[in-house]
Length: 206
Image (cartoon, rainbow, N blue to C red; front, side):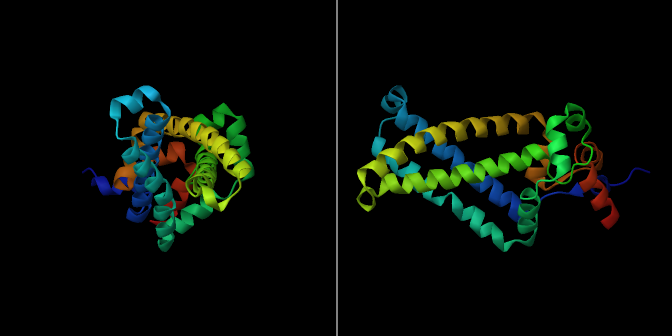
């Protein structure tokens, strides 16, 4: 007899974690698309309604921290934040060794690449939010600050956009990882291959 599908799966992400991920992702994509329209003359002419596009960009930008902060009410979300914030010696070895990256050895729930992506994304959101606030409220600061904020905002937006594209490319290449973020569960065999330590920990619990 074959075991039910549930017995072959491991629970990876709670509903709250998935909500935070997809809500933040949607806001980020809207910010990127509206920024592209605002900064590209051809797109701006094609879309029109610059005032509306700018308003959507600003409000979505200010809303970016909201899902992240609301997610703190979830114990599972806080636990994963703690995991992402812990960079260990095996993580450095994972980054330097292609063999380790392919084998998934000594990898917990998140590999070093995912930890770096989370840190860079969080840092970028903070910088973009801070510089965007300076730009949106020009009377609050001096001209030199606003000029610097505009320059930093533009370059960080470009770098963050590249980071997001890279994240999407990796996510679309790994269907099981995508399934984990969509349904909350992943196959045990995938977990053992990609996140060896986490799979072992979850196996001990069951």
